[in-house]
Length: 343
Image (tube, rainbow, N blue to C red):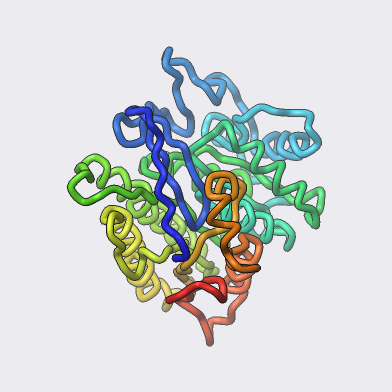
């Protein structure tokens, strides 16, 4: 990489998890105490539900209607797509089930948002999922503001901690009930941490692996289950990083996590390919251009040559092309980097 991104938050109860291939996530107590999650929700310090109304009953059709109203700024509620509502309304939405469906897990600023926008522009009913429920509405709004998306194209947010098996199971049930079974599933959760080996505790190592590898297994497995059940093929894409191929000093946990995710993708591709499911792994070998990166590493960015940083929109274009490949010439793994990046 052109430069190493190593930055920590001073508070002992927080850790900055920087994903150089998708987005930064400030995970409160991520490595020192796991947040208390109920299914599809998160609880506050007082035990109350921060994101969802426990008594809400939302039908799949009303979820889509409310999602459309959100795009117009008339609804700032963040419980769209969560399990509190999506399981209580009966059958699927007819007009949504006629569209192909794309699910992006790890839909933060950067690659995740750009991938969701790219598929939505093609008319895909798009589900965006991430752990931080408070930012979901901003993600949906940003996708809409990028333009080129038909007003009737559903874009529905779902809160999910993909490290938790029950939450991943609920996510897929809710997406199927609300939009239909996914034709494309993109796993884009990052877990980049940097510590010297002797400062890497078992807890830090485990949390990194849970976020970046275990969650990939859970999401990939459930995507495969639904695609196999439908018997209509599909595409599953995993976002990799430089660490997928080699371990750098001070990145032991991240290297194990990303190489494990790569091995998972290889195993899935060999097992699912004969069933008509295309599994791809994309190595992002460079820094991705996000507002957070520009804010926190402005000097380093200024030293890069023109086009010396990965543009999320171009990465998303590659993901779209992967999903459109004919099965006679599938790509399993490719690497993306700026022309100026050494490798």
